[in-house]
Length: 216
Image 1: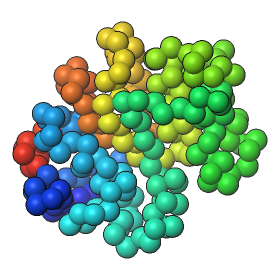
Image 2: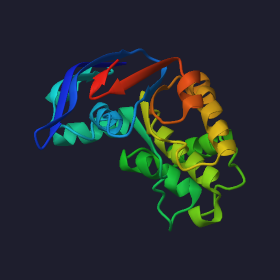
Image 3: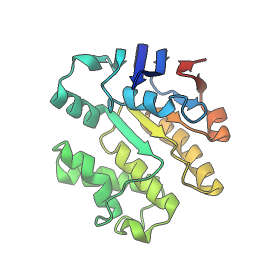
Image 4: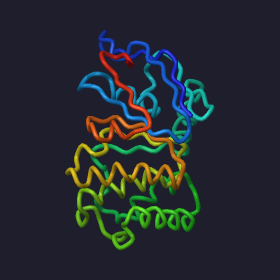
């Protein structure tokens, strides 16, 4: 699903990633751990095609990312990649189902089909009674689940999560961790999760540790 070869990234002459190599197979749940500043978010952004200023090669689902132009990259990202962040970034003026549908509508899919799948996802996430609520009417855990539904609406091949439980209390964090495995079982998604949460890191299929820009 993902193959990265010799990824090198520098900021103002400071080496942040120093030749990272990794492979992730389809359906794996990978946790990435390391101290602040070790390069977790930087690696996640590169693998997720949000940062193209690096050396090395990234292949996702058979596509060599470096060979895509800007428009092709945007289309690829919308079709194959989902993102979950620590902060949900929901649009406050839209309801849960409207927020969920946005990437599908950007992809120019049929509105009815997108809404039907959004309903399925939100119901699976336990939000069937909250689909018409706006973010300020939802709890933090509910808002994060809407963000997860949004990340899955285009049936991405891989979901990248950057500290997804970092803004949740322990109960909601535990529920979120269980949810990743349920989603993998139901939708066969691959998850690559950067986290400080020790419990989440340990229950992943594989835990990777990054230190001083190198995977250990």
